[in-house]
Amino acid sequence: QVQLVQSGTEVKKPGASLKVSCKSSGYSFAGYYLHWVRQAPGQGLEWMGWINPNGGSTNYAQKFRDRVTMTTDRSISTAYIELSSLRSDDTAIYYCARVSPYSGNYYTLDFWGQGTLVTVSS
Amino acid sequence: QSALTQPASVSGSPGQSITISCTGTSSDVGGFNFVSWYQQHPGKAPKLLIFDVTNRPSGVSDRFSASKSGNTASLTISGLQADDESVYYCSSYRGDNTGVFGTGTMVTV
Image (cartoon, rainbow over all chains, first blue to last red; front, side):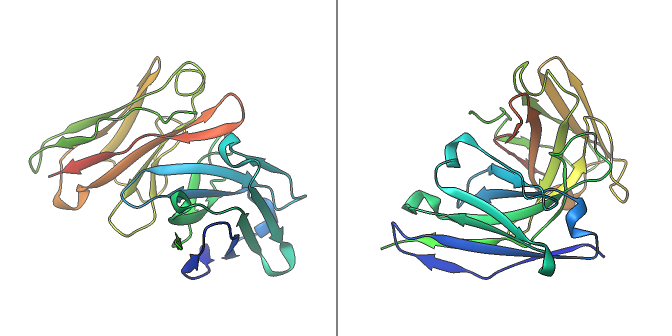
């Protein structure tokens, strides 16, 4: 069965960087784009970008373009998101999610990780 | 890049039907048949309910249906049940090769 398992809770200081992992299993990792979505406490979902594990191409939301890096390690079926220059408003749950193979576009997300809570506080 | 607009809350009684709207622009909802809907229970990851405007993934109840007219997409939940109490988000592809979510709608049963 498809599973996306993310790394654990992080506490970071303002100005620091974070790196969250997302380990995939149950499907061909290289065959599906992975997206990252975040959710601030009590707020809605915010799309951050995607990565194609087959080749490593990426597409980031304009808001994060100067601070985010998405990568993958195909040898261990794991995707990563790095976010630098953290601010308090980066406090959120960060989700990875896989693109559905049944949709006509790369933005339908059918399997999600459990989420990683990141708290940015001095 | 603003979010798609959804009502903050919608309520209904068990057995009734409710409809949630999702309003965007011709650059997203209106321009492509790539609207999805997600259900998110408290403390859980979102769950895909509808993709490509009207399609249900395998395993999703047929009490969930959706449509689109112009720049507004809609999700209808029929035969409302207690477990439907949740937050619902729409999302869409945007023509600049980005994605966008709606503001979210809390459904109360």
